[in-house]
Amino acid sequence: MKRKDLIKKLTDSGCVLVRHGGRHDLYKNPTTGKKQPIPRHNEIDENLAKHIIKELA
Image (tube, rainbow, N blue to C red; front, top):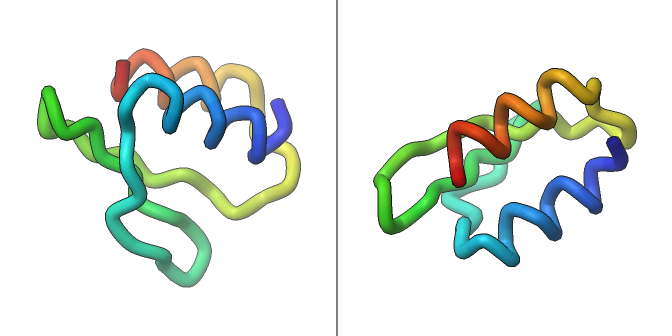
C-alpha cells in the first residue's frame, strides 16, 4: 500500500499526526488514545498497513 493512501485512510477516520520522527511518524486516534508509528517508506507492506488500520480504527 502506498504511504499516502494509508495516511489518507487514517486521517479520514479521525487520526491525527502527533509528531514527525527520524524514520517514522506517530499518529494517534484521539477517541481511543492509541498511537501507532507509520514508517516513512513510499511503499508499506500490506500486512503492516492492515495492522496499523486495525489498531487505530
